[in-house]
Image (cartoon, rainbow, N blue to C red; front, side, top):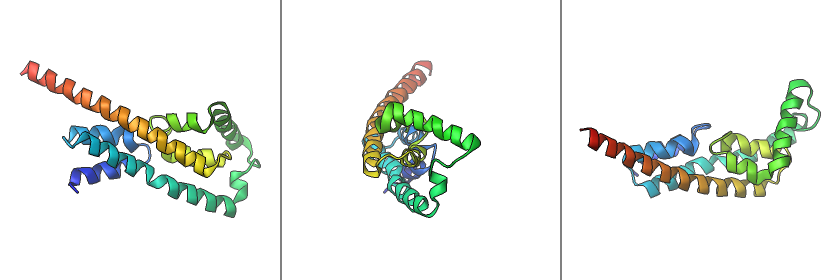
Length: 154
């Protein structure tokens, strides 16, 4: 595997970088856009089942941290997150995750709020597929625009 694709994979695995920056970086490196999108999807999704498993283990070990017994500011933040999840559900949370909170944050958030693990991972995968396609398309169009500008100016 070419080193550029490894960089895309690693960028996509990094919280808050994820596919939003990994795909444009791969396209800017001149890598195959379809392969970049697939590698970025895998890199972004790969940690999510591990985060879900870690969440499950931590919830068993420290139930007070994941329950309604929180106080003060943590309770207010928890209520806001719960309202987001109640209002938009796991699909809404998942669809905004790649470009909003990041899927590495949204997955444990959904699980902490009581969402089903399998349901959450399926919606995260679907959202990542949709956003990977959209970001790849915009990245290609953006690179073509930049190349036109560079060609017209030189």
